[in-house]
Image (cartoon, rainbow, N blue to C red; front, side, top):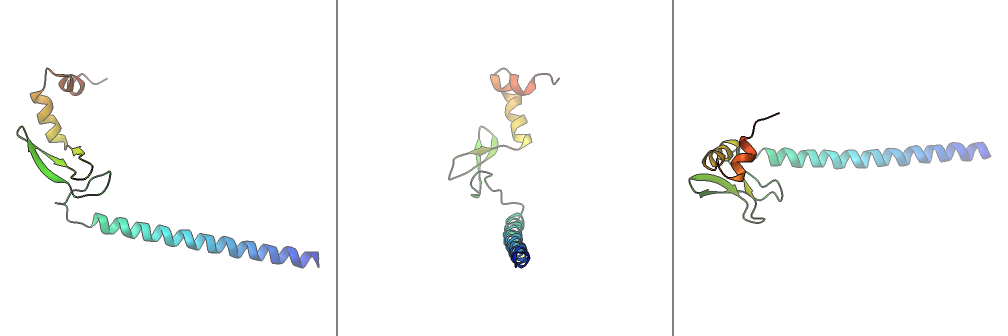
Length: 102
């Protein structure tokens, strides 16, 4: 009798683990699909890394940067940063980015 209970308990534990594995596999599949749809957006549209809002190009002092309208974050591409650093060679920004690499 005790042996039957142990086998039944093992079967129930296996079913429980299988259900749990299936649940998480479905959640992962849905998350992957959501990321695929998000990444399938046209390359022209840039999104804020913080909140996912569409970034708006804003020109400041001759450099076009991407600004988030919701969190007000400013995002620079490498070329934009290099333009600013070259102009600000004598400021703290220029010293940080133009110092010799070790």
